[in-house]
Length: 212
Image (cartoon, rainbow, N blue to C red; front, side):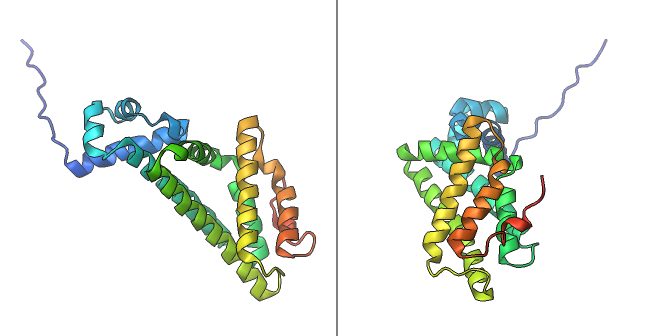
């Protein structure tokens, strides 16, 4: 007569359970965007009942905002780290362009596109969007300031130029995602536009782009 395999259940700590739910939300958002983050969908991905998600997340709005904030901040950290490997502001700006327009960032582009739409109805998400857009603008502005100090760039309107470059990146990425085209094919044109905006010589940024 066989003996049933009775295994003791391991009760997970609140920290472990919260981390599982958080990880499930991150994975789901990467695959399907922020709009996929419903109570039932996150619960199914985490392998728990919806009530448990509701217990560990103060609200779905907060969970969506937290998920967006982490993904957006992680993207910027990646772009900043890659840019810092280049020598000089022109090369760093080129590295930023090539990195953010690569297909590797399509999942985060979808998250951003959803955030802009969903943020209209969520105060928590709207605050997170503003924080992350400001962080991006500050990063680009720093590159421009560095170029101004080295004499590579000649603009006295750093903040406005940084916002304009960010808007172009967002527009190209969103359009490419919607049209199912490769955003990287627009890198050279974006580099040319950036050269004009920051007051750099023609080709000063574009020459640092990787060849396709």
